[in-house]
Image 1 (cartoon, protein in one colour):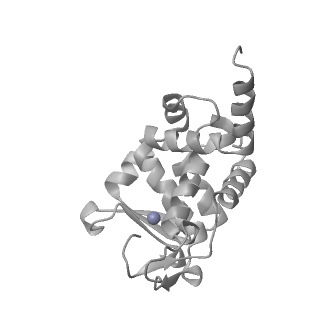
Image 2 (cartoon, rainbow, N blue to C red):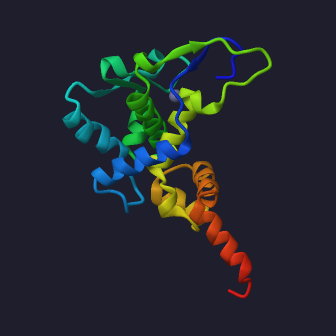
Length: 194
Ligand SMILES: [Zn+2]
């Protein structure tokens, strides 16, 4: 992503539009009020019904040199190191996050939407054009929706949502930046006695 050359870009998506997608997905699944999103069950049971060609393929770790997972939307495939797959099935937060990240690539980033950009010297391509940014935001918003976690502490969020504490902190930060989050802050600032 930080390479000067060879930057991959996709049509822009900001956090709000990604948040709308993850909210809708949870709503359809009947999980909009649940903290824990069962990402592996979702991929292997629901996704395979929606898209019969879709599959998650665990492979020997050494087959994926330098990477934990890769997603090939054209082949309806998320390929993942066996160690990551097993950890995700067991509910390990770091592995769940990787699977949700890859799923973000799967739904947003087919070859039709991918382009190779040559950056203008001294300028930066806005992050919302970056597939990695979009997949990271997608994973965070899917696994820990801001409307559910607002006001909680990071460890409780990490535990209830099954995500790393660092990811919980990031999402809580985002929750504080929404309209409701800002209002809450303002209100509590006005009434220090409460
Ligand atoms: Zn990625």
